[in-house]
Image (cartoon, rainbow, N blue to C red; front, side, top):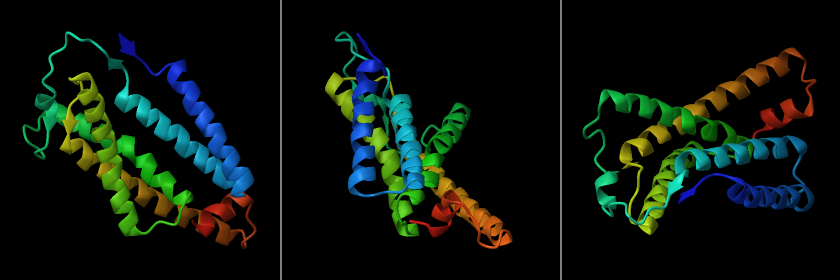
Length: 188
């Protein structure tokens, strides 16, 4: 049996999104730009979940040795093929580092913590799914956590540059900016 990212998964996620967006808009009185960035982050996290967790193959005949698919030693047996995986882990995590500062005020220490947690949540979820099934077809890898961390930090750097550029543009317009620019410049 294969559990895929289909309507049975997408529908509850969509319902969750509607509940949260209504709460943010009606109860928390969040602005439209905030809701746009929240929506972008929600879609992004949903896609990360899809990419890193699915498909889940349920096969009782699979080998139950979950532990052989775990690498907890950084750069152990690091191959040329692992370079591509590492670059993709950086690319995968970059949008998180870019989008999260639009939703909350974030210090450098907090972004470092979130960078570590981002990769750990992905790898831990893969491990839990593997533990429930008794096997995994994925490799739970400390290198993925390291490169996800780098991606989050680089995404945050791109965010800082982006805000700086927006402020320069606004300065040339004499401070007359639309709501989106104002939201970006004010930070959160």
